Length: 370
Image (cartoon, rainbow, N blue to C red; front, side, top):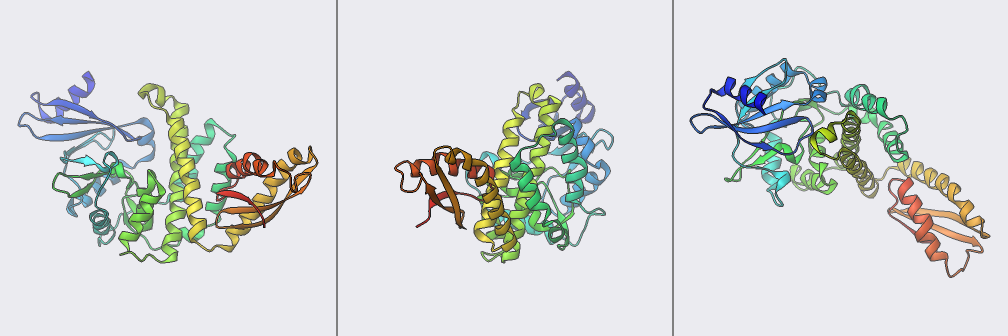
């Protein structure tokens, strides 16, 4: 804190002081500070991992563009070498800390950014970042990734070319709720421009679903006046899977680097949240999009998983057969000793359903076929 206080004095003068830390965020340690005239600012001090991932001179340019668009506050200090910066404080609350907010006004905020005639001099390049930075570093700490991660990643990367060919606009690329501030006058502003670049605008809508997939899906409806096309819905869910797997890798890296102990924060809990979030997005995709290749992949995985658990049933003279998969429900027939057995229903719920839900994204329930 002595170092932070000294830095604040260097920027704002000796009459300035630290008011309080700002909680939240995985890339910066932040403080609300005040100068001698009572003006408030936010000081951002990046983590080591953030500086490895962010082009600071480019971030400074993007900060200036955002301010010119009226969607953020003014930057008054920016050290391109350290990434330390200070912005005028926006009086209000980040909307990850409040229960209700105005989706229409948030959609308007996104439109101001996406409809700008200005572009970045760099594309965001999400897949390049994913493979060469986030995933590469996470894999350096753990090679044995979860089967669910592998399955979701495979599903996503099969559609990589489709996502990469979309028209690009200027995007925030980290437009989660913690980076949107609501003022007492019910105005909305973006903060944090570390990852701005040209990208598919649907990516920004998907980033809003960091907390729950349904929140981003609702924003998609509002953004497109209640009538998003199937293509836009499809891109929403795919980008939501992408962002979840990306932040899963970030959290894994932070855990193994020891940042959780240093900041008394459970990054493995965060990693598990994003893996579940990715599965929720996959399930949403399955329920809304008619994708024949995806259904074929899911059915193949269902049969492979059933093969793994059949020996438990065969041990007691029973067996189970896949019949159909529809709207997230797997239909099976029981054979041998399991056919007509009083315990067949409990076998399905306690064994077959539990394993399929764990191993196969998109499976919501298992039922006996009629």
